[in-house]
Amino acid sequence: MKRSKRSTVWDHFNRKGEDEVTCKICCAVLKYSSSTSTMQYHLRSKHPQASSDEGQQTLPAMLSGRRCDARRSEEITQRICSMVVKDTLPISVVYGEGFQELLGYIEPNYEIPSRCTITRRIEARFEERKKSLKSQLESTKCVALTTDCWTALTTESYITITCHYIDEDWQVNSAVLLTQSMPSRHTAENLAAKLIDAVETWGLNGKVSACVHDNARNIVAANSPERVNWESVPCFAHTLQLAVNDGFNVFVHRVIVAAGRLVRHFNHSTPACKALEDKQSQMKLPKHQLIQSCKTRWNSVCDMFGRLLEQRWAVTAVLSDRTVTRLQDARTLEIRDEHWQIMEEIAPVLETLKCATTIMSSEKNVSISNIYPITFSLLNTHLMRAEDDGHRVTEFKAKVRQSLSGRMQVVIIRLLLLSLLLLSLFCINWGVICSSQVDKDDLVAKPALIASVLDPRHKHLPFFAQTEKEAAKAKLIEMCAAMEMANAEDETAVSATQAGDKDRSQSNAMIMLLGDDYSAPRQATDYPEEVDIYMRDNPPSLDINPLDWWKANERRFPKLATLARRYLCIPGTSVPSERVFSAAGLTVNRLRSRLTPNHVDMLLFLNKN
Image (cartoon, rainbow, N blue to C red; front, top):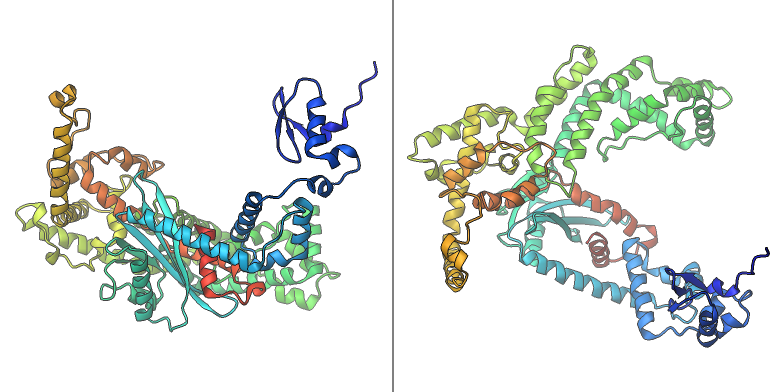
């Protein structure tokens, strides 16, 4: 049986269900019931050029009959702005011949706006988004900051500040507040002034709990109590990297230099790179490129060692091939067997340290509460000497362990916690420990340790002795007492309002008889009891999100929940600020050397928010 010829009208329509079709030209939806007459009528009336010679018409010819009204023109312009922001493209892309040809093909009747028009639209979008973010932050009671400085290709110096907070639904939120030019010297005074100005601009006075930064002296001094009224939190990932670098300085740096020289040769030599690919195919190895380490990028040494160990025999084969590598070069580039052995032995230790950095660099999950658990795990387990460790690995572990212990000051934290406990023993009850008795610089008051206690997974502090756990508990009670005194007036006003609301709700008989908290779990009568109940509860498993736990238990521990919002929102690292640099590298490039600092701020703000 001969098939009927398919109508050419289907070149302009798509099926949408069993009884509808959609026009490819104008997106109109038509009814369809086995006959194409409706579609042919639509083409004749709406797209005459398409119906006159369907087989030969081009898309521009088809679209030329469609009117690009003001509304559609505005939508296209807004999407061009979104493309520039999301893909970090130069605004001058609208002048590109390829871009104009593309839009001319897709929308012949659209008039492409000028660069100045796109700039004005982006500025308006920035002001609108900034206003929206400011409104969100107004309803937030507590935020944390991260900050870092960087230099663009134009040698312009910038400072980036991000903020992080936990919303009412117990979700972690983050935003880039600003990326501003920093032409003045990066002294502690200038950096502190920039931070304070940003806090005031965004209406965050009194809401900042802490600022996370690297270990540079100027930014550490800028966040000291003498200059700002929030806590200073050193970036844990940077602290860990400094400790690892101290371990590298023992003997591993020689291996790093030799490995870096070898990788650099393959990355800059086309014949060597092609020969490596051939050897990988012959030896059935993964076709991976070698990785070059970078001083400013964390864990790159671990990645370089791992890739070299994976491709060791392919690399050795290329160096042994005299048609590719000269004998003199081979002698310079070859890695000694001793160095290969060091890389192989030290790789598992570096992988563990890399894992710690990866966990701490998360923006969407609670991270600061993991600092002390991870630190003590590294010191007491992963950096301890194993039976099969060689003397080189043992020496490396010992050096990193010593450096990390000193930088985290975990040696004296036990003494400070014990001293806090002794102070509390002379008080009538736990609640009368006043802030004058405890130095604000004591490590027991550091946000990372407080966050560990407020994280239900770590609240029992298994890495501490019992006396130290009691001291941490005393600190929680002290903070609850201080918070209650500070909020006494506000709580009185709220209680009065709630009492009035309760009087108005007496029309409900069940609420009148049983009370509106009938189904609520039992709450503590005062903050010492609240802390005691919280500490006696069994901790959840490590795979539980602590914010989900607090969402479910907020009514049981209202005071501690307030503290949890304040401290668990603090990132454990300054990675959020540094991640802006990757987008900044695409924004401030050689094609955009005339981009003003104000427009850099706008583009990065819109890209990240």
